[in-house]
Length: 266
Image (cartoon, rainbow, N blue to C red; front, top):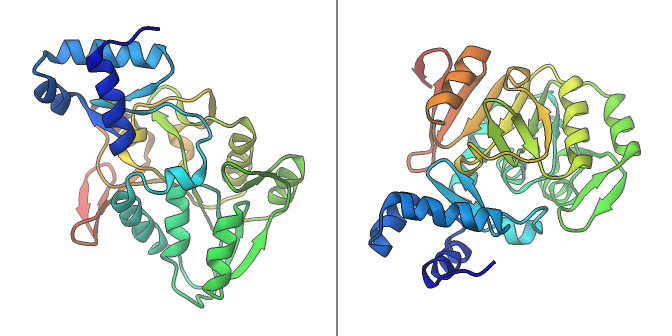
């Protein structure tokens, strides 16, 4: 598919920043919002981008975790800090693979009296350095994501019971729920949810409105979404109607805001 100069420049901007917004692009290029939206639609059809609410992110599937770690870093730091604050002494928790869940592990207190089960090799290394009891599930290793997957992984998780689980997601929509681009990882997330007393999904705002092929949970299956900003419109309404809490992490002031059916400050 042939791209014009503006569309090529847009891809360069996206590569540099990890995210672009329609409002900013309209001003940058001096064109209408509709023109930018058509550009993004064309780029999405070509497989270059994935449209989100008000903008777009790169469309690559199973991007190497080293490449993803630098995207939305401040936001993910805040989300990880807020999620880690929910963990209590003597908890048994599960943390799956992903860059946002990695920050959950990084913000657990060193030496904390908890047991963490994970299928992510990089998360296991973080926890060992913190002297936190860690159980690695085993399974087939995926090089791109540093995760362990397969029937053995699912079977191991199925024999456990968790006080809380912390899962990542590649997309979230009102209709499709939480989704992931990898079918093996989606299967692991489903099993972890089935074995958990409390289900938490950590997600940065670029995933709002995005949809991947493999849905692993409806919104109502999750107790809490931890993000750095509220979803808009239909998605926020769907969360409220499902009874799913929204914990909004403030990356500037290291404070959290808890939104359930109403709004409450923590």
